[in-house]
Image (cartoon, rainbow, N blue to C red; front, side, top):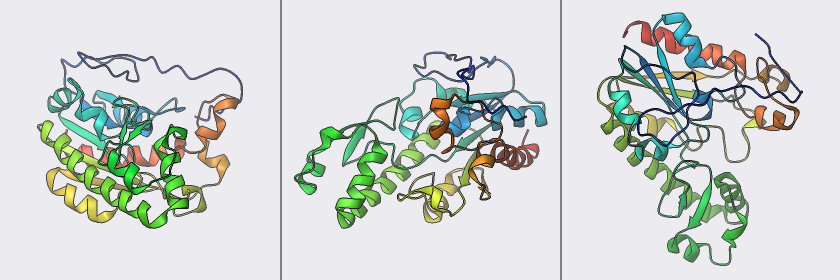
Length: 272
């Protein structure tokens, strides 16, 4: 299953669209007229650099059609503002919703791109007032912004993190309210190692207290703790170009996708 590559052949994702959605999803495009399980989430659900991401593995195990609505760098805002996806999830037998981080959503301090939620657009007047003297024109991505704030103004940074957590809870409740039927939250936690970075591990800023609050609105939660792996094992089973290798090391490899798929399959077996 290992398809590591340092050549120049990129993985073919067979991009496709559904209905009135402006989002581009991973193919092949599935028929939504028959029974299916919907998978909603960000980069890991999409399966960037993965020939067989966990939704594919679940489909093979359950023999039930699985539709991948994952989007690279998505936060809750992507799906909350989409005219098609929440309705498609409502028609699914079950929706598996990957818990996405709290950094990539618009809030009282800054706004993000409506479809590329990792892209920082502009600060609010409130943020400019609190972080007076900060040149926000130098930031393109939310992580760069937050890392800089954490380093230069740690006390004020904590105010932003608290706002992001509250915004995440509100946005997740709104998204779940748009999806009729059964929803399983997939909460995948990274190993507590140095690789998680100064801001913490993905899903960024989401803690157990938040999950307990949002868990009241769903059918169940699948909680997966990823084991610690060295760099080589984290890249196992991926397909990437030499230029993509730094980005690939930040994502799950095949062992992680297999572990997640096994736990999700176990939960879904009782429901489909």
